[in-house]
Image (cartoon, rainbow, N blue to C red; front, side, top):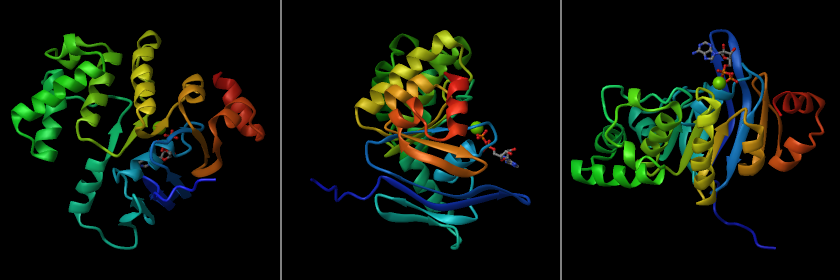
Length: 253
Ligand code: ADP
Ligand code: MG
């Protein structure tokens, strides 16, 4: 038996998040191994978005810690400087349901901007990298279009290219296909599957059970701000032992 000596790519320990007097996350922990893809499922309002937003500090948990490759990057009990937040965001990318592209910029400009601002790449260097990435997500022919001229699926692929352009160690996806017409989803899911196959470390909030079966190693089921189940995707999605999860999965399949 071989044991891996590598620390997890990302560890979150005992995250608690309050909005007002409501405790939205009630002690969530996860170790994400390098190259692992975890699907996060659960009912609406269970805290899935809040949880992954805490992983790159778009929301700041009141309790808990974050570690990247075994190094502490956040500790709620200590007041962190904004520089560590910025450093974390470069290492942990995020892809949103609503794409969040700049409407007044072309696809290639959208992919280049963050590289120039966050990494200080030159215009030529950023453009070159953007071209490679847009080709990789199947958008070579659409590089000079604005988001308004692209389908939802194409816009989301631009957003994935933008995230990849910062060379993150982990990418978080929050319902990446929910705002896309069903026939346009397949291309986005194909790009995500390729990332999984290439060994990218990913967490994906999704209602696409078939995709999770095919492309996730593990599934976390969240309910009421807690992890109800965390285990192999195959087992949880095809034969869940928990009745609540069974009903949820059946309702989506
Ligand atoms: P999910 O992604 O699983 O649907 P969310 O994490 O979006 O769940 O929301 C969990 C709960 O937290 C919901 O009750 C939601 O109304 C509440 N919530 C989320 N964001 C905020 C916020 N910024 N302010 C107040 N309440 C929020
Ligand atoms: Mg959500």
